[in-house]
Image 1 (spheres, rainbow, N blue to C red):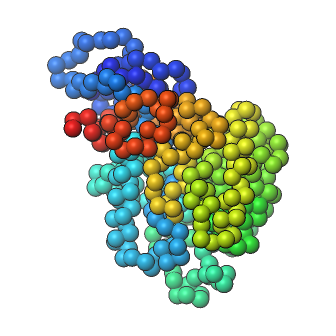
Image 2 (image 1 turned 45 degrees about the vertical axis):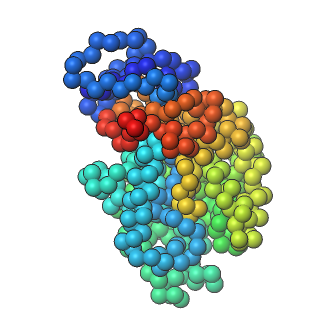
Image 3 (image 1 turned 30 degrees about the horizontal axis):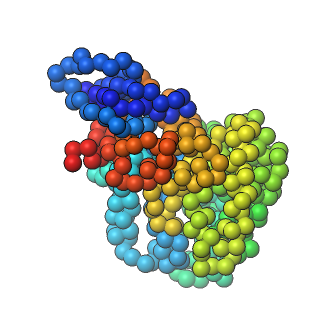
Length: 413
Ligand SMILES: [Zn+2]
C-alpha cells in the first residue's frame, strides 16, 4: 500500500483542485479522500506531497516514438545500425515515462516488440497504444517513395521495414486486407491518412486528398468489426470531409477544420475527437525545405482557430505532440502550445488526461484520479494551472507512478 498525502489534486475531470490523500493498493487507486487521515497500516509507504500537485499520469495521443529525424537517410533506415536505433527508441521511451507520460498512443513507426519489452519489464516505458503503420493509398503519406516518386525497393534497393506491415492500399479491394494485416501484427488502433501534410512530398499537401469515401467507409467498417478505433491524419479539403463522413474516431492535425463549419458540427454530433499537433509545426515553420516551411506557416493561424471553434462547439480536443521526426522534445510542450492557442490551463490538462483517455476508449481505467482506476499518477512541484510550462521541466516532475509502481522518483534527492 502507498499513501500520497498532503498533495493538491487535479483529478483530470476538469474539477477544481482539492487537498487530497490518495491510497494505492496493488496497481489500483483504492481511495481518494479529502479528509486529512493519518490512520494507515504500519506497512503503508507514506509519501508526503506537501507543496506538490498530483495529476493523473499524462497521455500523449499522437507520437512517433521510433522516429528520430526527418531526413531521408533516417527515414530509409540507413543512417545507423538497426540495433543502435532500437536502443535510441528504448531510451526515448524511458525518458518519456520519467517526464510523467504514463500512456502514449504511437501514430506509426513503433512495432509490437517495444510494447512486449515494456510489459515484460525488459525496458521502462509508458503504456503503449500502437498503430504500427499509416494506411494510405498509392501516393498517400504511408507510401514511401524516392524523390522521383518511385517505390524505394525498385529504384534504390531499399526494402520496407521488416518490423512493420505494409500499409499501402494498391487497389480499392485491398482496404480490408490491409486493416486485417495491421491487426494481425498487433495494431491496437488503425492509423490512416486522407490528406497530405506539411512534411509530405511536394504535390501532396494539407488539402490534397487520398482515399475516396467508399474506401474510407470500408476501412472504418473493417476496423470497427475488429474492435479497433480509427485515428485519421487529415488536415483540410476534401480528404478531411471524407474522414469525418466515414466516421473515424479522431481527426489528427485537423489544421483547416475551421474552413467549413459543418466539419466541427459533425464531429460534435458523432463524438469525433480532435487531436491538434501544434509543436511539430513550430519545427516545420523553420524547415530547410521551402514547401514544408510554407505549408507550416500557412496553417498556423487556422490551426489555432480550429481549436477555439472546436471547444466552443463541444468537440473534445486532445493533446498530441507528433514528436519523432523533429526529435523528442518534452511532450508537455504541446500543452503550452494549446494554452497559447486559447485553451485554459485546466482544459490543456484535460486534453492530456481525462479527454485523452476517452479518445483512446480507456476512460474506465485511465485518465482521471478516481477510486478503482489504475494507479497512474504524476506528482509535480508547483502549480501547473498557474504555469503550464513547468510540466516541461524534468526537475519539476517529482514522482511518476505507473500501474501502482514508482517509475521515477526525484523526491528522495
Ligand atoms: Zn504523426
